[in-house]
Image (tube, rainbow, N blue to C red; front, top):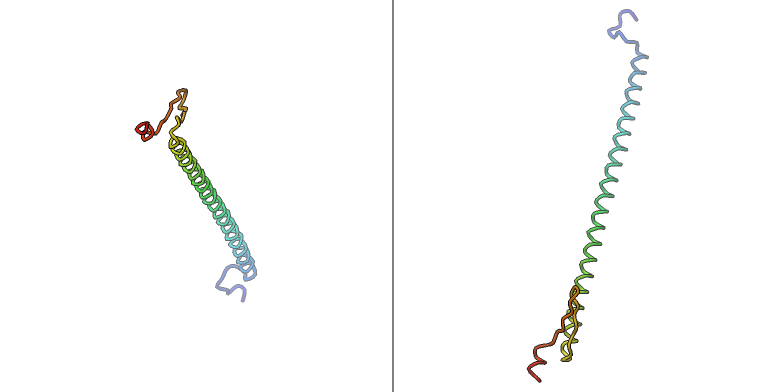
Length: 105
């Protein structure tokens, strides 16, 4: 019966080769899954880093705007007392006076 077999490969060899193919396929799928997981982690870290940097920049800009507003309000409050308000810009000093105070005197 061995000589009359339609398959030239012995049955045991075919099973062994099939197991090797299954094992090889398993390792290929495992390596691909690990690479996919690594890529997703890398992308996630990159997206998180960008989000964090954008958030920090927004907080910085918000603080700078608040400081600017407070400075302008403080200058206006000082000028409203009809006192000269010295402002230093670069290496020049200017004295600001509220115009309403000039008309009162």
